[in-house]
Length: 167
Image (tube, rainbow, N blue to C red; front, side, top):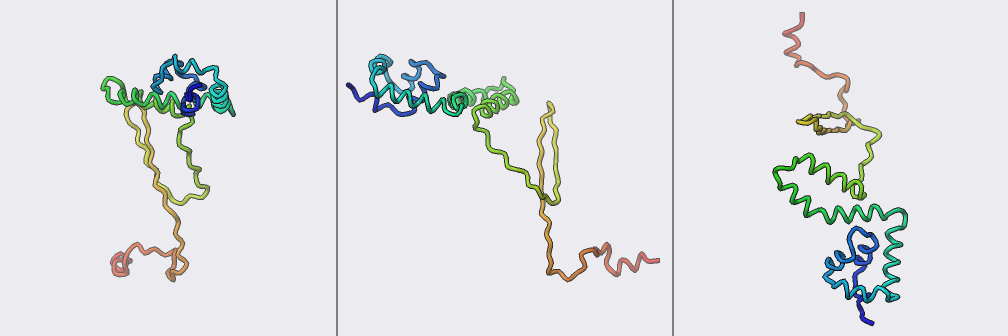
């Protein structure tokens, strides 16, 4: 018996279990001859490692996400090529990639909105094709209790200026 089943990385077995590529393509990816690997498919260790990989992929419905992650990973060169092609609209490129990322579960977690917010200013820019971009600037309320001045009194003019306008 050859040491092939033990020398193959776990990723090889995961790729077989995911099933997005053919056996021959996976062998080429790992620079193996398909005939050489086929000789070991009846090896108990090979069968055990493949069964473990299949179980890991199937647990908790992760198989679909694992397949999508693999597709996203494998499509990176094509996406890079699309970005450089002037005949493909940028919105199309972005939409396709965002969809793959979303379905693979690789989307960044959204931060929870704060329950108490202070003053805020929101800018909404609507571009061609109804593309929207929003920027929100939030401030915090500062309460300076050490201040001896009356917080309700905000002078609109200096005392000299107010005498000029008094009747």
